[in-house]
Image (cartoon, rainbow, N blue to C red; front, side, top):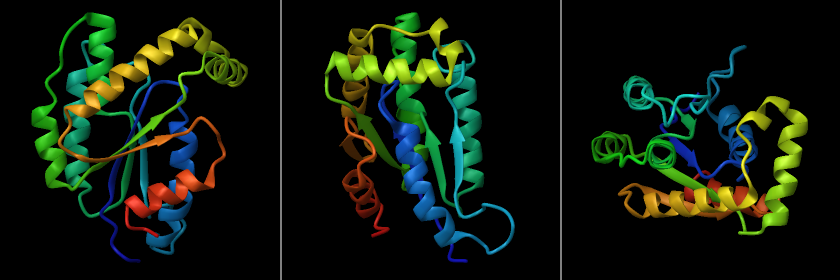
Amino acid sequence: MSLGRHKIIFEGAELAGKSYLMSQIFAHVEPKYNSGGHILDGCHWFNLDVGLYGTALGNKVLYRYMDLLEDLKDTNVMVEKFHITETVYQKIYNNQDFDFSKIESRLKKLDTKIIMVTFDEDEELIAKRLADRLKLYPHYSRIAQTPRDYIRQQQMYLVALSKSHLEHLVVNASRLPNPIIVDDILKFLKEK
């Protein structure tokens, strides 16, 4: 097994397509760095967003996962939503600003990269994605928003990203599947 050292954060508004793109990157990175055993140890994938960011626990959880990322410094790790999400959610739900500079200085030492997943500001596209999500996860109806709200959320993500000092790539995932985006991400990671 070659040692991987990717630290990749996938950020973006809800319904952007992060999970799908992560699955495509995982399918490339994990087998390449796998130890050859019966465990998928070539890349670790953390989804950190279920009910924590934007709450009183968000900051605490963020720092605990930061400790874990540092412990896993010699492995590949992909994270679905991290400090940019905490920033956006704290603003949306609590009207509070979150200073992520301390987290970013630690992330920078790990050579962490951000993939910002976006979509066209097309309310019909977002309504279709929302309908698909509700079919898969009916409980999501408790927090579902209007397409316009997801567009505003995306705009907040892009503003927060503009304050980041980490290397990043912005991709438009309005059309999925899209092998071109996957190739762009792999090239950005120097995996292709």
